[in-house]
Amino acid sequence: MFKIAVLASGGGSNLQSIFDSIDNGNLNCSVEMVIGSKEGIFALDRAKTKEVETHVVSRKEYGNKTSDKILELTKGKVDLIVLAGYLSILEGDILKEFKNKIINIHPSLIPAFCGDKMYGMNVHNAVIKSGVKFTGCSVHFVNEEVDGGAIILQEVVPVNFEDNAEDVQKRVLAEEHKLLPKAIELLINDKIQVVDKRVNIVK
Image (cartoon, rainbow, N blue to C red; front, side):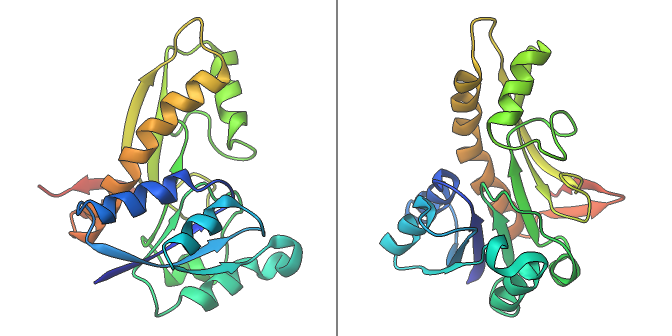
């Protein structure tokens, strides 16, 4: 059985989409653990409801050893690490140990509206301010560059003139909940090749 660890920093709606996809038979994998970036987040409650092992690895407690602690928890135990609304930056040995085995969901069409400080509502506010007509979400591999890993999948949503940032967030989030399980399914079935920083999806 393909095993995953999910990292989260908030409500965990993307984590829930993974649980739902497993329950309805669309994903043949198990969530071995959920690692939260702080205590009290609803993502941890979702994991406990499913009787999934939970850990809290906070930057406040571990500082620059945060990624090392996550590596300690996951090494040899999971096939894939999924960042589902995880706001901390992974660095160091974990990126080598799990090369092309860490994915992240980002609420924009990378390379637009990504990088330093581009997370959560910051992204959607920037989208509204920019006047773009389309935005969306991206699932990508995690590497040393923030939001710089090879893009696996993207989905586009319209930005209407009357939208505010919350409207855009809801529309994007609905697509995130479909896109993230789809990317995990491709990885489970070994359908992804990374060639020169680009992803080829094998038919």
